[in-house]
Amino acid sequence: MNNSKVLAPINLIWGMSDNISYLTSQEDYVTSIQTMMSLGMRKSSLYTGCIAALVAFLLYGTTAAQKSGEWPIFHGPDRTNKSTETGLLKKWPEKGPEMVWTVSGLGEGYSTVSIAEGYIFTSGKTGNQTYVYAYDLDGNLLWKSPNGKPWTTNRNFRKSHIGARGTPTYNDGIVYHLDEVIQLAAFDSKTGKQLWTHDLREEFDAKEPQWGYSESVMIEGDRLYCSPGGSKGFVLCLNKKDGTVIWANKGLPGTAGHSTPKLVDFGGYRQLINMSTNSVYGIDSKTGRPLWDVYFKNKYGINIADPIFHNGYVFISSAYGQGSMLIKLGTSGKDITTETVWKSDLMDNHHGGVILHEGYLYGSGDKSRGWFCLDFMTGKQMWVERGKGSILYADNMFYYLEEKGTMRLVNASPDKFEEVSSFEVPKGGKTMHWAHPVVLNGRLYIRHGDKLFVYDIGRK
Image 1 (cartoon, rainbow, N blue to C red):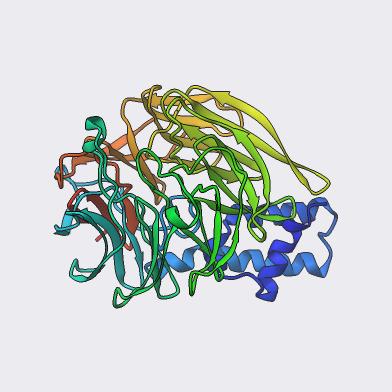
Image 2 (cartoon, one colour; image 1 turned 30 degrees about the vertical axis):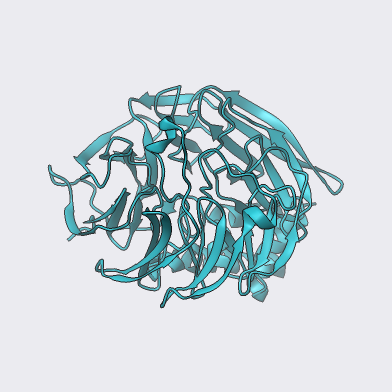
């Protein structure tokens, strides 16, 4: 009996879960109810109460953050990169939706935006300094604060890709940012005043990845999680208020990857799942104890795409021909077991992320060039279309941002690739369009280099 699945909705009823709208997906709660049904609890008062909790969660849980105008972390409140927005345009004008405003001065970088409490946060490199920026919803600069030295390189093939990577994370009036050389800092969200900072590379003997750090930190309750990949601390758990170390684990294979962790419930553990350069792994978020890992390394040791967890399965994808894999988690006593369900060369995702929607995976491939739709459980290809870039879901549509600057609006369906509109995003720099788009409150946010472009995509 998997107690974690049954206890999740109980915790919601008793108010024991911190920031629940940020942490748990609707699918997790559906799974909880299905588990109780299989245990013969249909007629119990506990089951009735859990049904009520599920209904309340579906109505108020994951939608609450976005209804109040928030996208507080990279890929959104539940980390699925699926917006709960409705009432958006199903077709754009020929030249694209109306641009509401644009700002310049962000410097170089691939950080996208996080949005909370009427503030827009991002990061960028100007001169020899990385900054965190805060704007209001009309594009007025409210503050900018320095955080660490920027990542630099002497190799010519890397020089065109310098700039800030990680997206700031907002939580409870504080903005957290991990820069390219793992200077972790906390800022007051209204003033930009630095509250505390850590040089994680020096403190935890971390080796800088060859393309700099890209992680956006994860927060649950009073705990902040990040992955410097150091010999004195591979994954860290800090007190978000003052930065003190709660635990620092060791012994995971490889060094830090470029993905951002997720927190999920499975096998009686609240697990933190993430990618290193060598593998995908799960650890006990309470203690830092490694629970499982599966080798998954491409020829350059660069794992960027975030893992996807659903119903006890973990999907991972990596570029340069590594491909995609689905792993099934199991239990054996207190141990977590792993089993490979399928592996494919298709959709070897580079930087743009993958979305799971109604049983199908959507994203682009690197060596297996193109936009793909794969069956989640089998890996079967449903369709493929030319292109490569970043993906976002909102209002039953996919927003495909091609890395060369074309924004495409596509119906979300496994039956066929059906584009309904597209437009060219203006240039804000010389590099690729690698910053992921965001949709919130009827607006589409696209960062390119020094500029942020904001479009009105709400129905009139």
